Image (cartoon, rainbow, N blue to C red; front, side, top):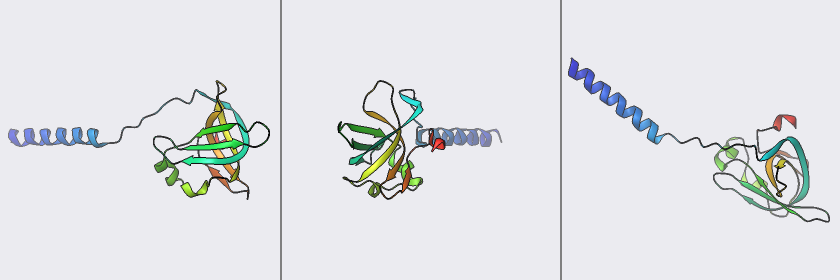
Length: 133
């Protein structure tokens, strides 16, 4: 009987160890680099949409005199796909309005929360502060 319990305990511990090794690591980093208190709107043209891990990136050239190029961070492809976002929704050359929390240090970058296309279609790309939209 003791041998049965000993084997069962070893099997349970081995299964638990295997689950720990095989489960995905949930990496997280702080959003303190972004000015979460201020939603900013940038009108521009899509230069690129990088569907990459660990974050996707929307690259937009601002309309108007500055022509500044902005890099907007978003979630990874698997999360975006789960909420219905498709890579094809961001073709190069399309005019968009980007809602984002910009970098605190003034770098032309930010955390995108929503993109509004020229036809009025709204695409939510983030959850932090998106309840404000």
